[in-house]
Length: 158
Image 1 (spheres, rainbow, N blue to C red):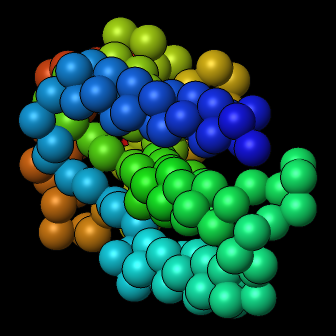
Image 2: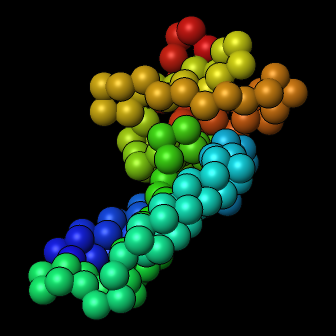
Image 3: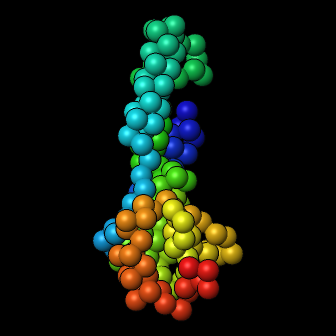
C-alpha cells in the first residue's frame, strides 16, 4: 500500500511541477482550452462510488497483509487529487511567452514552427505537431502576438 501511495504522490508532484512550470514559461494566458469540469467531477464520482462499494464490503479487521479501510480511503483521496490536478492531453494554453499542450511546455523560442489556420493553432514541438482549437474571432489577436513573439517559427502555411 505504501508503494501505491508513493506512486500517487509522485504523480501529484509531477502534475504540480508541470502546471507550475507552465505558468512560469507560458506567462499570462491569451487563450486556454481546459478539460471539462463535468469530466473531472465525473471521475471524482466514479472514485467515490468505488470507495463506498469497496469499503462497505470490507471487514472491520482485515486479515494480516490487507490494508485497513482508512488506507483504502487515503488511496482514493490521493487518486482523486491526481485526477483533479493531472494536465490532460486535451488541455492547451497559448500565453504571452510560450505554449502548453497537456504535459508539454515550451517557450516561443523553442517552438520549431506554428500556424494559425482553420479553427486551430498548430505548433511543431520536438518534431510533433500539436493543435489547440481557437475560435476564428481570436485569430487576429493571436496571430499578431505570435508574429511578434515567434516570428522565426511562423510556418509558410499560416
